[in-house]
Image 1 (cartoon, rainbow, N blue to C red):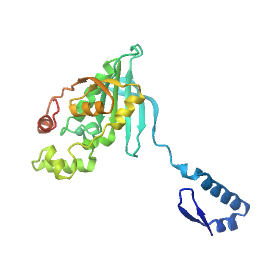
Image 2 (cartoon, rainbow, N blue to C red):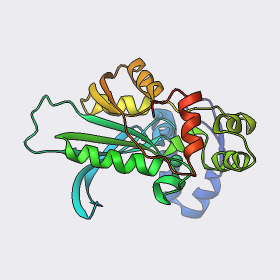
Image 3 (cartoon, rainbow, N blue to C red):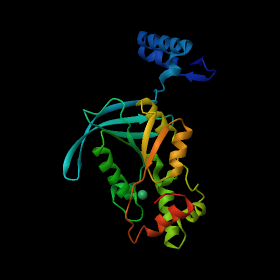
Image 4 (tube, protein in one colour):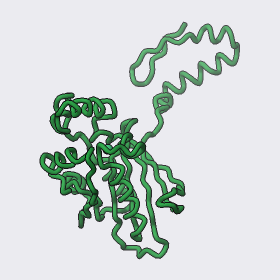
Length: 248
Ligand SMILES: [Zn+2]
């Protein structure tokens, strides 16, 4: 049994003696590799670099037709910080055309199941329509913004409290969650990476515009997304307008 000290001061007890016994010269070779690795610090760098992006093309069905989009996935610092970026670019678009950008917070109930309790699905559809009609349109889809950043579980917990009469702000407070805990750091870094430091923002939320501006994005215009309320989300939309300054 050997005591090996790694470069970062961590003491690792390895059963290298047994390894040597069992595998003979292979064991000795492995011991040398392990100890060399520790001396050189190589074994400390096994963590994957999680900051990065990958891209492909994504054909989607939209309004009964096939639309070809560029798709980029981004990985932020924390494991959950991932985003999907969909870009519609007209081949004839001038080089200096301003991109129209939607930063869309993921909503499992709305985006996937078309829940009528919120307006996420309608906003996403409207954003898709908009970005595919301009020369350069972008959707930055942020799954970890679920429930304005509180996650799926707490969102549904807050829904249950809304069933008892609380509004969306009161319910968040009751479940011990911030009213809005979204941050836009990754979205801002994505825009910088795409060379889109100046944008038109598709949003009804002035706080989102301010957050992006604070992170260095030049938002030259905010284009509202007009949604028709339904009996299930009327109160939610009213609360967003009254208590969260959304321009709906
Ligand atoms: Zn929603």
